[in-house]
Image (cartoon, rainbow, N blue to C red; front, side, top):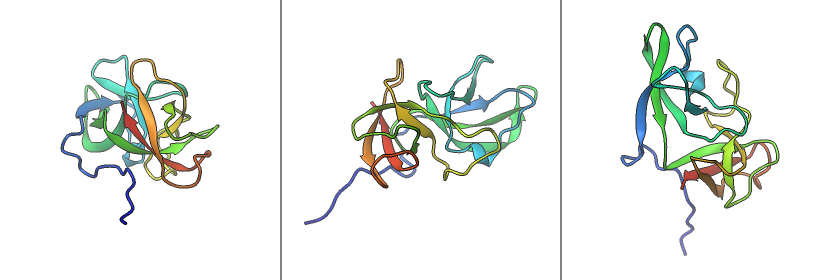
Length: 148
């Protein structure tokens, strides 16, 4: 019998990915921001890093080498489908809804380009843990989340 487990879809042609200003003018993002959880910003047409407990509206998947809108970074954000994530403080259980956990600060990336998530029911954007990939779901373990 063949084993099966949910996995992220690499280069999923059905994923909703949008281009956007990332952050604000004068604060450049680098490739170290790929994989971080973001939410809609207030500057218009921009995303900013999530704070702990925020609805996860998307995950940065790429950055461009140029800037927009007076010196802001520009890149792409995946807004749905499946994403590998890291369980934050308190861990994550299979089937639990998740929100953004403590994200690494700009310019720092030590979690293998994965957003940090914690248990919590999003208000407008619902994501759920569909697989514990490594470990048992405690803080630091890799989990697979999916937008529902």
